[in-house]
Length: 107
Image 1 (cartoon, rainbow, N blue to C red):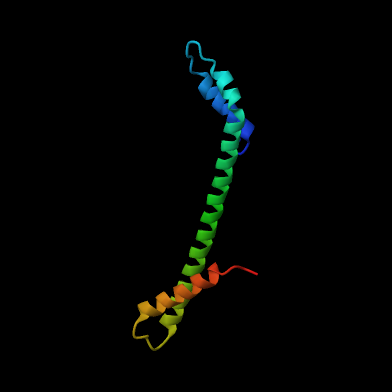
Image 2: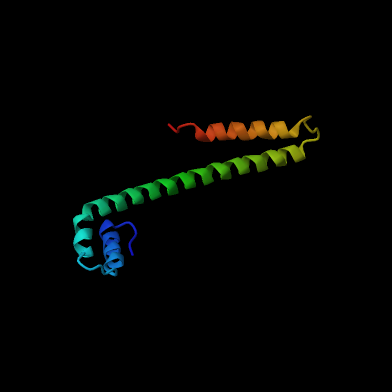
């Protein structure tokens, strides 16, 4: 099934609901009368899914950048001869700075 095509989704609904036989009820007619509603719902769900995928990609990008920065900071810290008094606070500040940089709108 092509999950992004509303007509394909409607055909799947028709096939599934067509299996139910109720005396005096024409399931096909009911579905056909609600076709536009079902197609609109399918389009809305597809748009929402695309949005969620985009958000997940952006979050993964932010996490990769943060961990790359953390790894770089760790390497610089290990190479340094003097250890800062509170390495945890320095790491937190570095991550905060990187996150703030990533979340700023790009021009």
